[in-house]
Amino acid sequence: MKRFALFVMTMALAIPAAITAKTTQPRTLTESVRHQLAMLPRYGVFDNLTFRLDGNTVTLAGEVANPVVKSDAENALRRLDGVTTVVNNIEVLPLSPNDAKLRLAEYRAIYGAPTLATRYGMQASPAIHIIVKNGVVRLEGVVANEMDRNIAGIRASGVFGAFRVENDLQIG
Image (cartoon, rainbow, N blue to C red; front, side, top):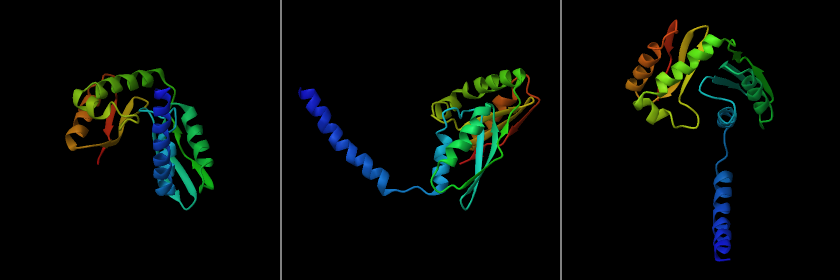
């Protein structure tokens, strides 16, 4: 009985704090769109989504390995308050067994590096996105410094089967 009373008291104290934290800081439309895209359940390391906001119109771009992510992104934004139109220019990457193998090999090479695994591998949404299209690998995302950018590029270039590696990682 004492445990139950302690639980109820703890919850009574925690709930108002959580509610006031959410209501005191409203999100901008840009932050809401970014949040909705990041929270897509099937959005992962092999996808890259970008958007442009023009008034109440959101234009989606990028590449996805799973076709469902394209429709999930559009549907999530259509339900968002403040968005009137969604233009979906997301490219669905070719469903190629060779590209699928290459994606996994690139993932192991990049996130298998101890320096990158500890800094970026444990995040809910991966910082380094690996886009593979017809054997060409492109790295997208944001890393902490030039050294991490170079390590990711070198590790990606060492994977057998990649025709070319484009390191488009940004330093942030």
